[in-house]
Each structure stands twice: as C-alpha cells, then as structure tokens.
Length: 142
Image 1 (tube, one colour):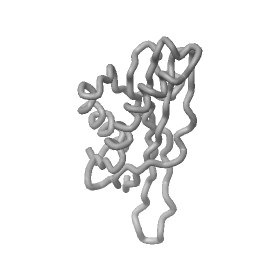
Image 2 (cartoon, rainbow, N blue to C red):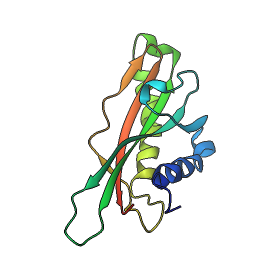
Image 3 (cartoon, rainbow, N blue to C red):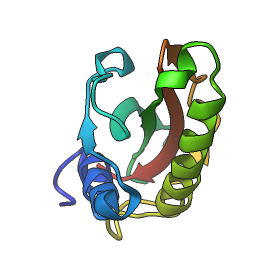
Image 4 (tube, rainbow, N blue to C red):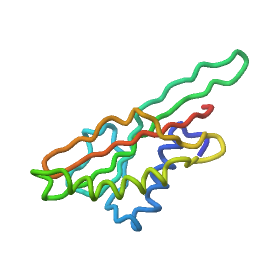
C-alpha cells in the first residue's frame, strides 16, 4: 500500500476494525470532518485525516511528509443529558484500548510508527452523546 498517499489512514481503519467485535464497537469508519460523525451509532470509532504537511528537507535528500490522523471515540448514554459521568465511564474504557492499540502502529516499513500528539482537540458533548478525539502522527516519503 506504499503507493497510496493515505495508506496510514486506510491501514488504521483496518487495524481498528480488527478489534471492533472484541471491543463491542458498532462501526469503524472515516469522515471528512468531525462534525459529520453519525450520533445515532455508538459506540463508534472514526478516523479523520487532520493534517498533511511536508517536512523541511535537507539538500539532496528526499522530502518527508508528516500526516496526522485523529481517532474519535463516539459514545452515548441516556443519563448523560444531565451528567457526563456515564459518558466518561464507558468512553474511558474504550479510549484506553484505542490509545494502546494505535500508539506505535505502522502500516508498513515506509511509514514511521504512529505516535500520539497534542493536537487532538477537546471532547465535545451533545445531550446524551460524547466525542473524544485523539491525534496520532506519522512521517513517510511520498
């Protein structure tokens, strides 16, 4: 898959789908932006491409690109209308599994392993629904 610029994202979706049944996740998909996440299907994982940037090159060397992929954990609970504690309980367990499964994952020998970075954004809450984003970064030569 090295000839596909989005190989890491495609591989990450498959990597997460491999754990879907074990974790009780209803769907693992991708969306163009976080605001397009389906709030009717939970728990769910969404893989979003959030950054594609060239890395400064050294003269005579191939350029490297840095990509960031955000994994959004989506959960819901009826009691969360007045208190987000239930969302934190069910979301927290799934978040721990996702972080441990994704951290260090490399789609192939041409992409550096994914590492967690600080650009994930903050959790978002909508009535009974919570979104928890976590961003991971890789580098590769396109």
